[in-house]
Image 1 (cartoon, rainbow, N blue to C red):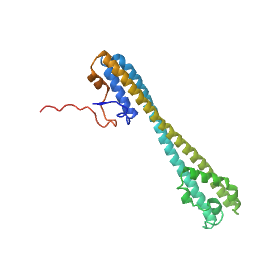
Image 2 (tube, one colour):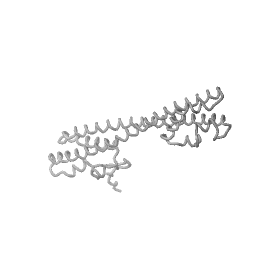
Image 3 (spheres, helix red, strand yellow):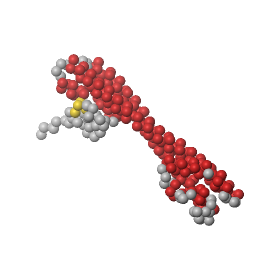
Image 4 (tube, rainbow, N blue to C red):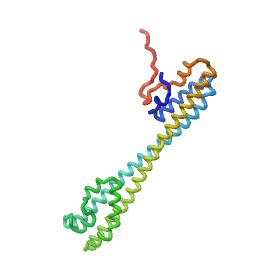
Length: 235
């Protein structure tokens, strides 16, 4: 059997740690002479379960934030492509002519939609600020109104994409914080193991075999198989 140590529990998930805590609490509770040691394990288990429940919610918030970001990113790309199509058409399909040149410069819509969040939103903010200059080179009132609408859409989608990116990063940070909680729970478990070992040996002098059985980490840290196996059945 494997003892619960800092090294053996390094990769133990909070969920699997809860299983271990629950097992030890149960083992102590079923021995009258050791039942007084069980409440500390139950209290640590409650903290562990609370952390795991909050982590699950944080993981789902991150999932929603990622989906929200990809939806916003798609809308942003659509706004860029629509603006590109209209200004390129008005420029007579000449990328060096107006209003396409003032809108995209030396970059293309295909390049913009491949940009990462920071560079893409920078393009959106810059282009929106240049709207008066872009509109000034368009002679047709109808065409100017169309491009003005498309620029407005780009501005709104840029704001939405920025907010979605911030929400995603905040969710990533929040979820990462749970690893700190997990490590604290592991440290507290190690400390409680030491206290419990002393408590068992105080009641049952010399019974280190009992200490090993009560406090053993009897499953792999990934939960794939038990560490203890039953003896083979006699033929």
